Image 1 (cartoon, rainbow, N blue to C red):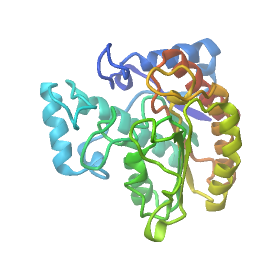
Image 2: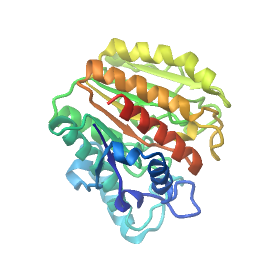
Image 3: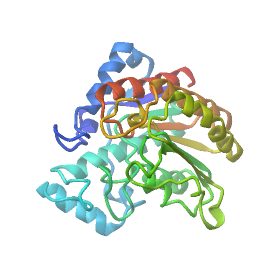
Length: 313
């Protein structure tokens, strides 16, 4: 069975109606879920908040305090100018992180092995700062929690968002047990400018990371041409849990990126990873919505992933 987190508290994470990352993104996803009848095929869960101690598994105490302070005033930036503070930012992000953590608990102790958290996958935030619309890095908290609380050694993180998941990649660049595959628009053309093919991990982790930068306007044919290498890389690692960041900004028509996937690419990646999770990881897989700033793409892309997750539960 698949568990989906849905509720107003999760939708609060956003930067205003005029911002690409607005608070209407969850609604765009959910209306399409209802239209397709997917709500009847999943377990629905209310968003769950986490406390400071959970956030501190990944983030520094100084930075957590900064977010708490600026969340009260709702002024200034949490980085050098990409991520504005907003009133209630700390609480809103705690629901993003907490829902994922609740999903892990269901995954290990409940009936669901597949989890979908649509407003999540904030992959740019660093341990000590925000970045790229990401206040805290929920992926980092998930990884730290899996290893500290669930005795999981090998975690696979797969990212098909148009932007390179730098906050995750560089936090675990020297960790051989965090296996990363990141398919993204070439950093020479898009924020954050990282994720070159030669970046494969450092030290003992060299060879545990696979960056696949694609040219602007890369389409499904390009995706399908590189996916077998990504899958073979992951299969060789035999992960114990799989995390997918299914950013919809790699779908054609996004206003701030230049890629041209269709929702079929998201469906394929999700289906193949779910099958791999069934084979190696006792079915354990969590999907986060990630980026995406065209509301139609969010609706179709995320639901393509959700349907694939349901079909391969």
